[in-house]
Image (cartoon, rainbow, N blue to C red; front, side):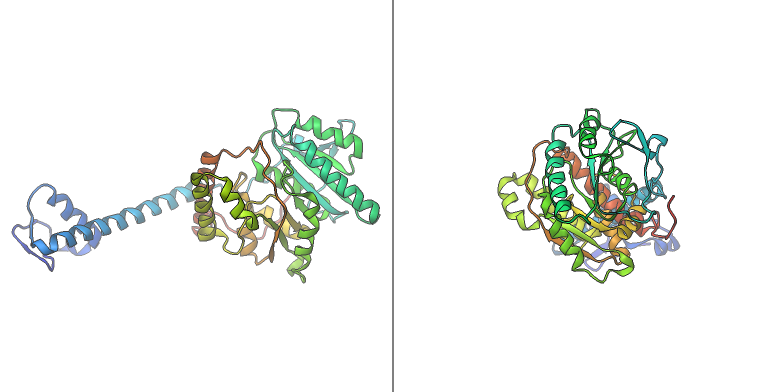
Length: 373
């Protein structure tokens, strides 16, 4: 049978059974025509329609390839997904180290809170930057406790499988302030920042739980700002709310100090976050976040991503559960020694963002209420 198009007249025929042609999608027919057109003169095209036909072929072939690629990525994301978050602890991770370097059994996020504030500090090879952060944090917390004796706190340093003296450095603060105020939780192997934060959260005793980076980039006294942001969300549904520290107000200054390439990567990452996962928060990656105990328990129990993009999944889960989120501007200074590899880490985070969306979309990851041991 002859294949005809509006601007063409046939000069040859393809021996294609009618039932096959009828069942084939239009894009496949175009690809077949393109295949034969490169080899034999199947169609005589008018001069005016030649360019239009080529553009049509290219457009539909591109769309078909893009859709096929997206379907393939979705299938790979679904097949390779770990269905249940990694909530298991190694036997040695069930204990803190006290001032005498002895083991103490960790509490559980499901126990009633006994402190006003828990500060979780994920640390990986941070022997140099950690002291400055802990000095600032503990000076503030001690001063606040002197002003308000009813205020209680704990700082949990989670050593994420460091190869340096991070645990030894942290234990000096345990010896100085006591293991009731400063606790060191060494992980047997590196889990990633998200995994380390989760282990600290699940071992905390606070009514409110603050995530704070070991580099001390955010001024610690700004905890008062995120506390006010959290209070502004009252009443909290099911006692759940989150306040995120934000550097969005510093974006223009940071652009002036970055290369064009890094600025392009930053904007690309922000677009992917907005397009795929979280639309209402401008800065998802600031490591200064305050959660109510109930919000921390709910979100971290469903968290799958354990590395750099974990913040995005955390906020995506919060949005799915309709947990109110406040974004609060904080003082932030870039500190040397970042573990983030500029290009490779951005690519990893881009991949994780796409997989977060696809895995929840295809049902590989599901937000079902379950009890966590």
